[in-house]
Length: 300
Ligand code: HEC
Ligand code: HEC
Image (cartoon, rainbow, N blue to C red; front, side, top):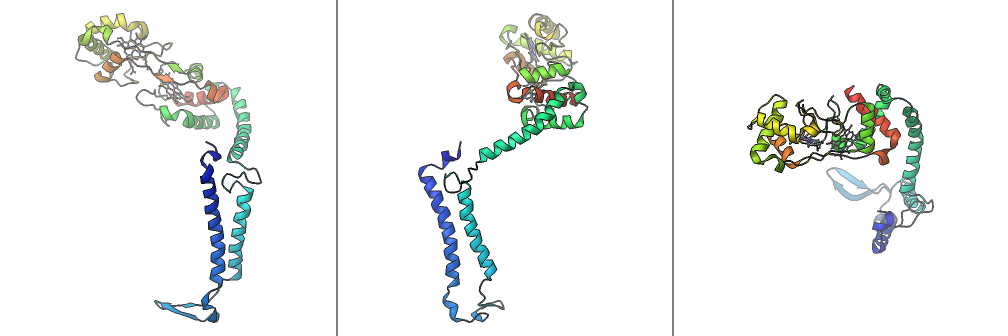
């Protein structure tokens, strides 16, 4: 929305009128209070009211104070004329908030572009030991990633924790760069129907639970046979997952979507499609490089 979008037509005139009424009103008030009917009372004499032992004397406002008041009114007129103050008039200086924002962004970019270019030459693992770079990466993370991964990068249900050693796609500098640059689209199909009804689902869930040393209501041995057939292609015969697919390791008791029997059953029945957006276009390679150093520093 630009300034002119909401100061259209009558709104525009309305704003100018209100501003004028205020300024002219101030002038009138000053003029009016100078010519008062009490002029017949000599300066410094009592006005005839007192309250609580305090008596009102006829003391005019000091000249310096009055002049200051006139000056502020004149200043308001000049200021409103130089800057876009009268409705949607442009102002004589041609100042716009967009323009100012643009210059400030350009200034900051000039400053940071140099820093990012310098960091681009340092390998991620090494950059992760540079406290200044990590701080910049942390700020980028706060602005671009914290919304999903949390400001402490510990994630939440559906959003992986980036501070531990457990990685869906791999935690090497190259893999982190790859994830942030191109994004990731996980594809865990809904397999409820393929497992032969409720009992089949229960059995597979029991087998998945057994991989992290727990027990479910179903028969884990029967579940294993189904797992080998339906799940092992993506999660591996041992259930340790495949980082090429981002198929979670099911044996470590670290869960993206929750490790209860209920949550696991829901995953199996409905599938899961976690989406990590690509930042190639919004951040660019150099900033992603610094971000990767920050992410890498969290677990190394
Ligand atoms: C086509 C490949 C594929 C198949 C087949 C597949 N999965 Fe998955 N699975 C994935 C992917 C990829 C993820 C990660 C989903 C995400 O991150 O959104 C996943 C996630 C999961 C999770 C969630 C893990 C967590 O940390 O919360 C469970 C549980 C799971 N799968 C169990 C199974 C079971 C049981 C089967 C067989 C009935 C199965 N999967 C079949 C690819 C597959
Ligand atoms: C809109 C939400 C969202 C935003 C914003 C987001 N992510 Fe993600 N990110 C995800 C999800 C969801 C996954 C898991 C994808 C999956 O289930 O396979 C993920 C996965 C990752 C992974 C892979 C973790 C692993 O275990 O391999 C990394 C690294 C990562 N994100 C870093 C970042 C960084 C850095 C940013 C900021 C530039 C960011 N993410 C912004 C949602 C988000």
